[in-house]
Image (cartoon, rainbow, N blue to C red; front, top):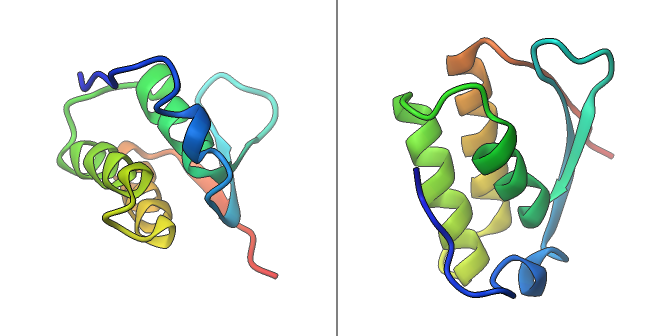
Length: 96
């Protein structure tokens, strides 16, 4: 599991938005909406069903890189979708 250091590391970057994803985790009745890097990081670190998939690890690293500003937020969104595919998690990509 990856750990983020410092109390404000996610709070500073939650405004980095990307087109929303609606993700339906197993056992939930409704979709969770992921709109920001903070949303994506929270989902990956605290709500994901497993932490051993290759695409999951890539998604966590890409999200952290995007939070640090070295990768565009859209790359984190794409990595999250690949991790969802790998884990068999259903999602809707919302693009306006």
